[in-house]
Length: 236
Image (cartoon, rainbow, N blue to C red):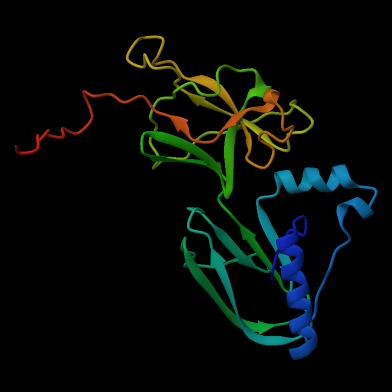
């Protein structure tokens, strides 16, 4: 199964290339659903996409073959089922092989781990929800988007709370409880505060100063905890 977003020129060119290859080397079978702008239920479809955490597909007529599903490395807890029966040995960052005699009506359900997660690098922190990068955006009016945040344990999931009411130009929004500021050792600095994040595609999409955004959040350098680096002056 191939999922392609046709909203950009590169993806549309890729689709044309696949169609040409199928015409020359076929037969291939393509199933295409009508784009959301051609249907009256645009809002309903978008709402379904925002809350979806898996993909369901149905095999065509009888097929004796092996199905390989690529499990993303970021999906720490992934479940796969065939006709509602769980499949074992699902590993992140690897292919899951399902060999069986497929028949019409068979259903494969893939549920990915869309919990929040964090990554830190070079004294900066970034948050994700599944494959989606999150960013702070000035439209939330919840403080300086360049304000530093405290370190968090990247080995644990990050709790993300969906925000129901937000700017209509923002697709998805969440809050994460983070410590903010540079005085993180004070009593006030130890208290986490709800900070708003949106999907990276929506960040800054007004192209104006009201939607300034930041993806990598700065982490204050605590010289007491930083590893000691000796200074070796050059020899004269």
